[in-house]
Image (cartoon, rainbow, N blue to C red; front, top):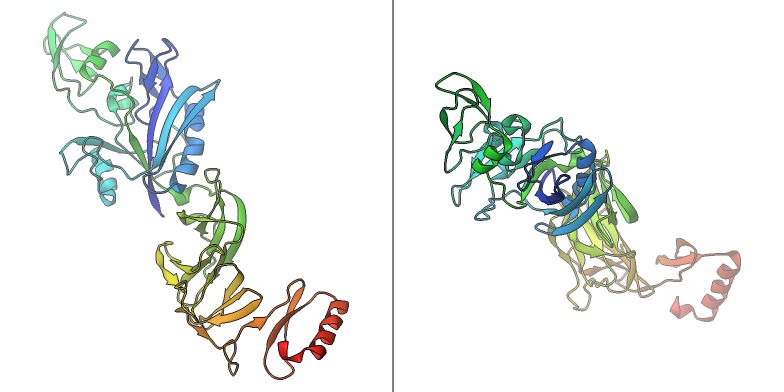
Length: 407
């Protein structure tokens, strides 16, 4: 998952009038629509808002969202809605072409292909917060909120107002029509440069309630964190495939992959796992996921984690059934060894049972659990047993003499 979209809706509290204040973009300062006071949002405030969001949102399922309330004495209170969603038009919900976002960011806007609405797009500024990595793109911000106009928005230019208004020149009192494309206007009568005050700016660009905006970012640029690991395997390229709890957003284990630098490659949030879930790699470039509560093995692509198919689980005789099994492994030829029901069995890559080893008939081999495993077979047929201690080994020898047919 090289790039992903993070959707945000943020409300803060105005420090002057205690009214609700929408934060519709990654800005250093926003204007309160009620009292016209400016609210500063420094790096510390954005750290409070974004630190957990940027970790958790990419790990949610597509279009899954969450809510959160943050109470921070220094930064104030924030109400958040966030989720894993690619940028889209907020009017008609048409997705924006993400492959064209860099080009849109270079010019500052995009037009929705569904309704034609103009959508603000810009590169993430480097001077607001270091949490948003270099190369991230911001989509759908509301530039009219910014107290400093286009400069305060980091180059995000607002669209013209639908209804221009007249503004009295502070120097000669001449009436100047202004449309809100810039907060700096030049009087055509006296040549004086005037700056539109906040009340006039808000009349031209009235701030709506909290609206959704997006951070389009490369999640691999941020360190990946996990809280627990149940199983892990590695391929020949140094990539890890893990069953564990990614970040703090999951109460149960998931399957995910990390590159050799421990950066997230992909995660399958839709596959709920448990402590008994096991993994194995195949020679064909697939990851097999085994769960004792599921009959088939699930095959995933090692490249992106997409489901490639299932192995066994049909319930037919002689077909792999992993339900209530203990463990499994993939041999170098792609066949699958499964331990379960006190038996060791081998299956082809398509789930059909085959001979356990060359020259041996397909059979269920009795296992005894409890110690170090080893293969024995004085008669030439391998048998899988365990040795926990010399005393137990002697007991098994005596039992074999009494009931040789069972061994």
